[in-house]
Image 1 (tube, one colour):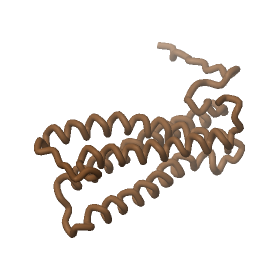
Image 2: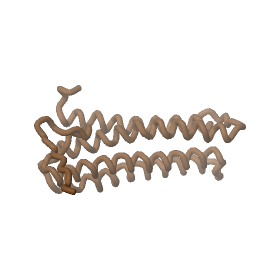
Image 3: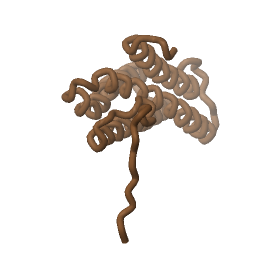
Image 4: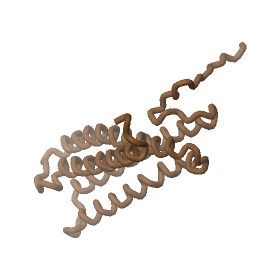
Length: 174
């Protein structure tokens, strides 16, 4: 909750981001029949289900990642090196986690010495969703960093102006 220490908030949002990512993997594997061994004969229906679940869980995973990395940036706002390198950190950390996930998916898919269309679909939709999650998180942290650079005040991790921060909009004279 709001009364929690910054460290425990960071840990909670990190666990949430990882948890949503793992749930994404589980749900996509389930729809591809990789957990049950039952494959749908209607591949078009499978693709529609994968798109639906990937978008929905991708948005939630992205939101959790945005919150996590924004909280870390906010926690370290007195360290300018971390504050300004946070967009790069936000790109690299999930990229490493997702590369490990991709490697695990590949190893599991090749246990039977071939990759079937269901395993390909699982990998494709996982990869695409991971890219979207990284894009959401990185773009949010870049925006936070630019706002700090321009105003001298780091916005709240949600992107809202901090209390007492005034932003003036000046209309250019025509």
